[in-house]
Length: 161
Image 1 (cartoon, rainbow, N blue to C red):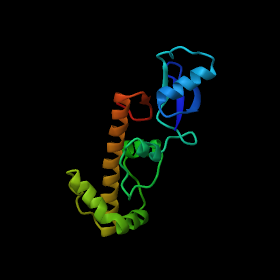
Image 2: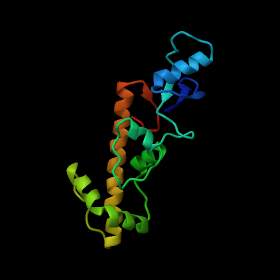
Image 3: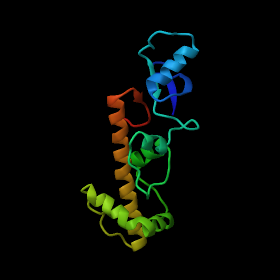
Image 4: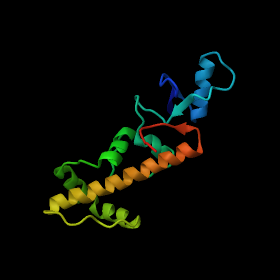
């Protein structure tokens, strides 16, 4: 996986390195710089990046859940859904719910969530249910990322505390 290495004091991006772990990516950066000692405390490895931005597939590789009804997206997209809600057009939501509606409802039910109140139309209701499920899922992914941050060397992202 690719990791973006950053100096947390200055915000300077020091490079992107291919490695199995964040620590290995930092070690590769240090080796490239001709330094064979321990890295400074102000150097961190962000969660894997793909084309400059981490993707959901990278988190899936680390064990995060991705239901069939969730399209591939970047971590910034996920954080935005968590913070701002899901704004999906009613046509797209209707298409997703037509194909995966039972799965979405079951997914929410398995997590102990009630469905939103009935809206003015079935089309709007499909949008409301899917939007709610997306926000719950995005929150779960953000919690997954926080757990990684708390338990290993892989940190970063727009997750807030």
